[in-house]
Image 1 (cartoon, rainbow, N blue to C red):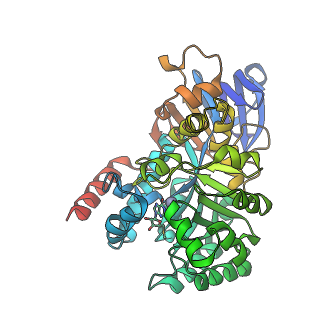
Image 2 (image 1 turned 90 degrees about the horizontal axis):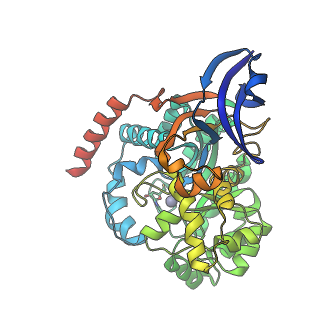
Length: 427
Ligand SMILES: CSC[C@H]1O[C@@H](n2cnc3c(O)ncnc32)[C@H](O)[C@@H]1O
Ligand SMILES: [Zn+2]
């Protein structure tokens, strides 16, 4: 008997949409895709009627600081360093476990409601984030943010190592752990050497902001004679899997290093635009064989955690930058938001609806007028869908949102806790 059967549903596959089919799920994986006729004989513990819905893979948010939803619309219209130094870092100093718990729940509620089933996070109090991930059922890749300039720099390394030992591989890789050195300007070389030594000791990958702004690149060149990518390469950072967030200002030589060392990129178009950082050369990176996924960054620089917006921006932004409508076609943008993002996070069987893939599935309500006519479902998702069309969300075969009701989050309680947090940060 299978665990879950989704019936009467249109299924987005690599070969196009299969209308009126069924998806069978067992032990967190898709075990078969059947016609509705074939599905009549299947016995399942739970059945979902997918009539009027399109089953698509869940979106993968490759870079965020999810609890920063607490600071949504708190400090805007500033460039990165001004924003961090004058507004965000002083306020983050007031964070505690309880606030991270509610901030993380807020972000997860927002992500599930908008069709995201996996997120890659870098922040403080990661044990608490891991607890919330455990309870809510979402998939996550967690990095304890590490800053060598902080008085707790060494303790943070110990905490990241503990997080790795406790959670990496939890629930058949529903949680994975990376080391999270923040950025070149907060992690001096001597500290990076400790991070790299720890990555060898644990055989653990890295998640780091790299080459986000012109200023960062200029400062690293001034100090070392090399770009941040070349410098990190020479320090030995890229020996294992590395997820580099942003990579807005990268040279041809940087891209060659990244391709050769399998450095994956988290492209965060909305945050890069809002912080006036620039536009990453994504089509150029993809052409060189670099894996590029999409991220929202934190909701204080975005200002939401809506991955469908990133998919749409990735598809449109590069067309305008390069005066080329084929710069990132709809399919490529969709892949960056799903299967390429999954690859960037080290998942080989995530991001598609196919037999043998992990069952992270979103059922989109396609009854809205903006879904008509339906010539091409990829184009519809990328260019015309609303993320609020996400109606039912499944992660690792478990239903986390059913007909727009979150099953693992008490939203009334969450609202009241976020109001308290707002009052706390307003004083
Ligand atoms: C050390 S935990 C993560 C740290 O990163 C800060 N942050 C948020 N957005 C960005 C960004 O776009 N670039 C660099 N740093 C960012 C966040 O506020 C935390 O302090
Ligand atoms: Zn970031």
